[in-house]
Image (cartoon, rainbow, N blue to C red; front, top):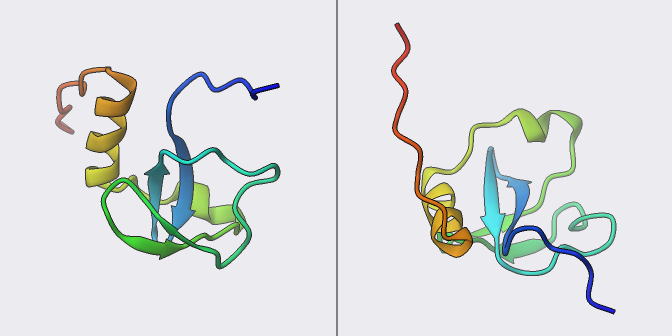
Length: 80
């Protein structure tokens, strides 16, 4: 049975940013330090630390995931 995937990508924190990846997420997530190729084209080492999910999103992965999900990028919001 194929696992449910609401979107054709998954987020993975790695090397100081939250990256997106098109591969199926392994049960429990990617092992700490595993090298993976993400949507921005970088090869990064997965990070499972508690604070890693709070990192900024890689802008190139964010753009790539919107194409995969066929969802337009929301307009930029300026801080006032």
